[in-house]
Amino acid sequence: MYNSDTPLHAELPSSRQLVRSTILAAISALVLLVAVVLPAEYGIDPTGVGGILRMTKIGEIKQQLAAEAAADAAGTPVAEPTATATAVIASSNAAEPATKAAPANTKSVATQAAEPKVEWRDEIPLTLTPGEGMEIKLKMVAGAKAQYSWVVKGGEVNFDTHGDAPGKSISYQKGRGVASDEGVLEAAFTGNHGWYWRNRGQSNVQVILRTRGDYSDIKKMM
Image (cartoon, rainbow, N blue to C red; front, side):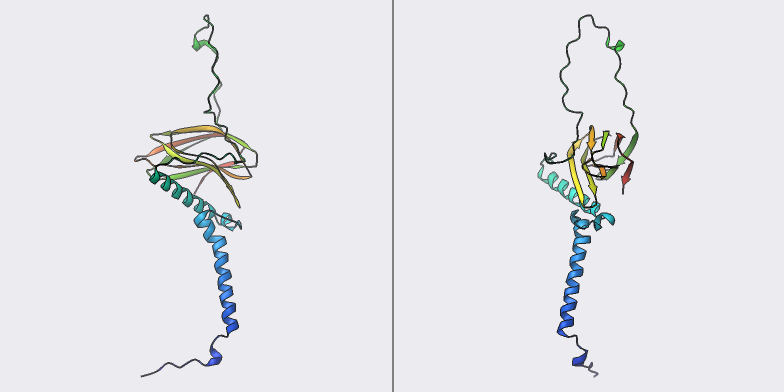
């Protein structure tokens, strides 16, 4: 029977080489953790590399889906926007002051001047199958404002209005089982700001988004 040759002592790595290899392996693992794992799994991007490689968004969506699943399982409502958010969503759903009663001799409502129709800059329809989610983002500079209105045909959706940029992210507003929303989105920082919708129903729905205002681009995020 052939026995393998025992390696010579000189061929074995020295203690210094082993320590150096161990340190290099640890540094490589740490770099991968910070630059890849944290952005892709948790949406945390301290270096900005995850945003460049488009992994931060994957992590944010994973965390959002996990939060939705936990909320659905617990039957608890999704948290409302925090008061510390630096950007403002001025919803036009707020109650309007009561109007004064019209005089008795007022003419027919049909003869009164009609309110001016809003002229939207962009209109995007999205069809969501059961369980499917989609995202639309506006490219905005800090402080820019965009008026928006979206409506769901055929059901309701869960949504998250948020923004992101390399090393930055913010959630403005969330909701579950919502059929429409409108207001003004003010960018907290220069980057991409918009909406993520998910269909938790049993049939297809259509989301129609209309926007106008201070943004340079609008696109569907893949």
